[in-house]
Length: 106
Length: 264
Image (cartoon, rainbow over the protein chains, first blue to last red):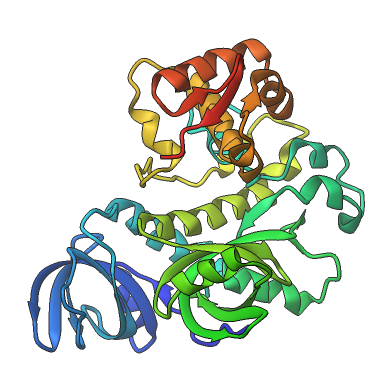
């Protein structure tokens, strides 16, 4: 068992709290180029994710990687989350997981 | 519990996610002696919770004061080692990773194992020492849902359970969970306009009970008497609830007064 590389659940607003650390989030893809993907976070912020996304990309994709700054992530792992996903549910989870229940996750 | 607020306890109870009522009456018993009533409990956990638990070095495994033997984990497979008699794989849920072992006794076990591949999200059921079954995830709302369940159960065990004997302000510790319509989960039918909150609570409990593996496996289904007895609700209410659920297509009758969950 190893918890040395946990990824914090973040949305756009929480990303700044984890700059330089491993994070995970789900974005709704708005634009996809070779080398980066632009998307909307679950709380409505525009985020840039650098890396090589899988093809094809579904509307929602989870990325796990390192936060470069408050609106960009360097992705290590991409997972297609399909086209129907409850973003507000996930957003609430991010807020809870960074609040007083942080100890369950990090 | 107030019937006009989100009855999270009812929503999560019955399916074995919450500690059964029986364990609350004797809080001073040592945790490892109440194994029989808690053995039915299936607790959603994060790997971090499991790690914190073993750091303390308890011999009777418990989390937040509740005996934990059977657990649910949701995560990504990061490594698989396939041998003849067993399959070891690593599940990473973002809070850490844990090695899981699936023992292969029959052909059906190895078929299960073949479906699993690296990079896939799975939900794993098992005991802290060994893993019994897992299945791939297709609806990714399950992931957020699993972690929310971990949070809910944790809060319930640490805040609500100690107050159960007073039973007055038990709702204050309820997390503000958005009423999500995730996939095939029971909360999805909360958009019924004419059902009162009380029926909704009982419906969730009954549905969760009927979704338990033992109930699903039984060909005959479960009689309403048994459901009423197990959930500690009057038979009358259970029958009304089952009728309602049947009219919604969520359960169906097998023989007279026996019900089964419609495996959608």
